[in-house]
Length: 141
Image 1: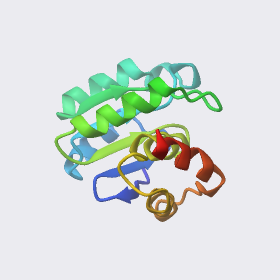
Image 2 (image 1 turned 180 degrees about the vertical axis):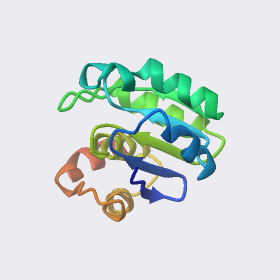
Image 3 (image 1 turned 45 degrees about the horizontal axis):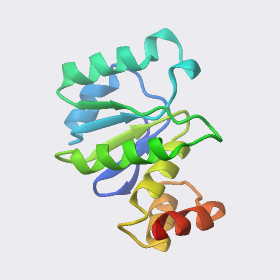
Image 4 (image 1 turned 90 degrees about the horizontal axis):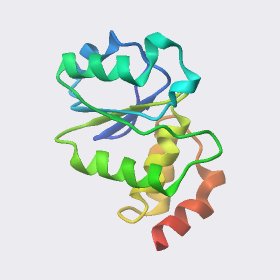
């Protein structure tokens, strides 16, 4: 599992396995957000299986499926709440980590400058420059 750190409190990755939850807990994460719809995974990586593994590891789990190319305002609101309600660092995953980066940036746009969000994603290996206009619009509300 490759963890791509965007900030001290938020990291992303591609699909993980149920067995990775213990390692995430050991790494200091307190919450896991699944941004990958169940329709994209096999039964061993479904949100139900992953939630059970997170619970067994002592992690809070949020299922917030983001459909590629169809992110909703509800997705952004759920991501914002999951990050805000976490009692420590948050780990989010999808297929590659890109959707988890985009939904995070949009969810944090009212709290941070677009340049800072884009730079944070770049540190993690994700180019959000093509989404600058959307991030700026989210910042304006």
